[in-house]
Image (cartoon, rainbow, N blue to C red):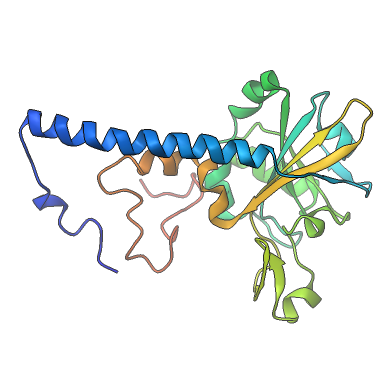
Length: 242
């Protein structure tokens, strides 16, 4: 693929009047996109729900908590599926890139009747240690040994991986990882019944990464086209060399 930034030094430069005309024309496309995104969000909210029939318990900083307790007296719960397998000593660096955007979210979300939590299979002690290292304050709980991660396509058993076709991102495909990233959303009614309303995975969670949204505005964009794989540049924020 042609490198997006190869001709950036030769980029077209015009007068202010021409710049303004081009920018105004592009604004019309941006507005169309915004309206389409609003419509897509509306359709997302109208998707059918499925009732959560299984009881899940999580290891949380203040002890065992049920799925209902994670709502923290709100009717909506947003879960980030953070890749951190039990045997690992640190969380996924790419999920960490996403998580660097999380600290300020909960206080705002709770004022729209929503709670936020990250969930991983690693033991709570490992989550707490890594969270301290990263300087994060958002709530993070361990789903082990429950089936929660497996039930919501965020983890896969060795048998599933060996089969050559795990179910992830709504399709069956080979998977060489025990855990993957994603987001799931739940609703709890006044009677305490919990419903799974939505889940998204892989590129579907791009919109949750504020840093990427800012880079998409910049002349070089994400600048990942010629890398070994997208995000090969990403490090833990305390391991960049500059």
